[in-house]
Image (cartoon, rainbow, N blue to C red; front, side):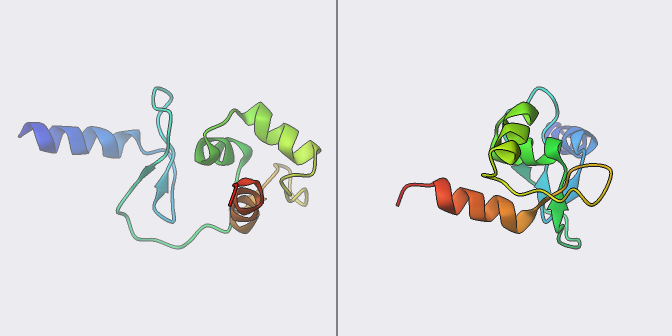
Length: 96
């Protein structure tokens, strides 16, 4: 097996969640990476997934929810942050 094939198989093994081509990094990585895997688009993400997407800690995501800067669904046992809310948050907080 070539070095490139070994690297790609290791990356595939490190994939934790694949949704709309967003793959959460393993614990050593800092930013999410794109994954060329087709599939259904996710409507919502967990606090951990949202933290990885935004590049912040889970505690920061919970603080944003508490400050009502990020809306979350509390209908289920775990908090779920809709993908559209993440997009809206980034649009509102990104300077023009």
